Amino acid sequence: MKKWLFLGLVISLWMAMPGCKDDGGYSLNDYWVSTATIEKEGTGPILIVTDNGDRLFPSATAVPRFEYHIGQRVWVSYTILGDGDGDIDHFVKVNDMVEILTKGIFQLTPEKEDSIGNDPVRIRDYWFTDNFLTIRFTYGGGATIHFINLVSDVNNPLNDDGLPVLQFRHNRNNDPYNYRMHGTVSFNLSSLKDDEASSVDFVLKVTGFDGDAPFEEILTYEYGE
Image 1: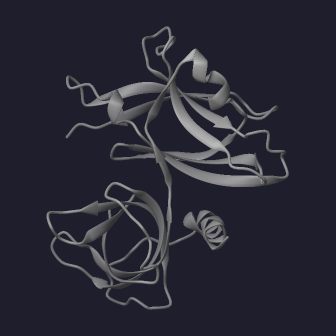
Image 2: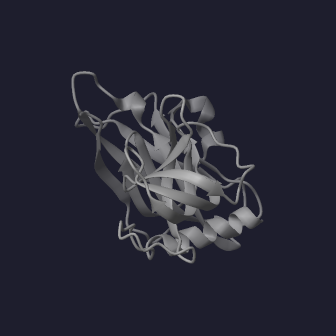
């Protein structure tokens, strides 16, 4: 329950939090909330790289038992202890950390159609970070676990213009719409890369609620130097 409460808190505060400033006047009463990726360089300790590019060294943590892996996406709440040096922007204390569901692109076959589902969601925001497309969304539920996927239909992978079509799919598992729920998910788009190009356009399609405008947008995934 604590993790879900924290996740609700970070979503509500994320857009309101100020950016980090190297002014040297950091206070232990201040904290920042961001989405980030766990990284590691050489044999050194882990780094937390926020989506705005700040590289954070966790000098202290209030969540010592948090299980992480390299490349993991997280929501992180942190307090800046001081400015870093070299490749480190700041030394920080990690106040709390929540894993973000992270998946690749699912190849959808007719046999998997029912299990993947196509229940409505509402997209609140999305952005690219390195190889990840991160999406914030809302949905109805509150009683059971829901499943989220980004799928490519193996029988219809391209639209009439030759662009890959990716569908944001939601299976609510027959969960009644008791509450409006919030979610964040990151999808690894590496499988879309073409060695002959530095970016790829694709179509993102989402089934929305009745009364919502259809969501179908062309996005550009840039991965070149």
